[in-house]
Image (cartoon, rainbow, N blue to C red; front, side, top):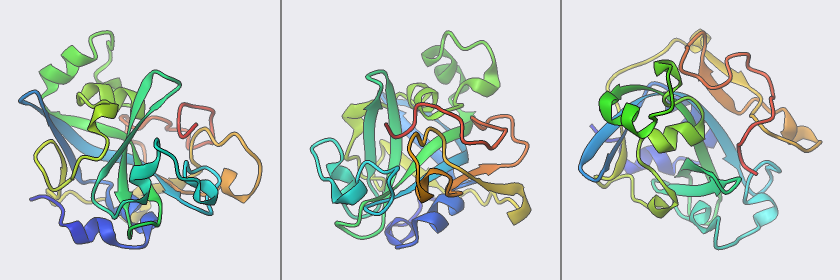
Length: 209
């Protein structure tokens, strides 16, 4: 069952980022169904959040989808290489988004392996946002997709984790100083081999440049 629009339209992006853990992300790209269980997310709360593309209400062609109402996809390219999947949340003109950092692949494994042909370890197929997007067939061309449609969507399969099993940690790649550098707005499943940064630290990576 697809998540209702009301799930995404809530104002508390941190709660949504945590609630997405255990939900099932699915894509249907070129009639190939792929997906898996979300095990790692990061919240970006513009305009106050210095780590966000929408910091200080900066509005550009690149980040325009962040200002949309919740329930849509915000895709961007990082370092000119990695496509990154974000879920827009909240109300219109309040630029909140959740980066999907990792899933445990469960649907369309052979297709995922083909897309990630150079990946030799199965637990790394969708580990990290760039790898995840490639595995699921997603590119910047999917920016603006409605999550109520049949291209990218998220379902609730009744998978849940205890609060003690979900860790709140600093986000990855926050290369600036100030209070938002270490806010614990990354949520991940403890001891899960599919997460991208299991040591829970603030390590330089590819996120939100």
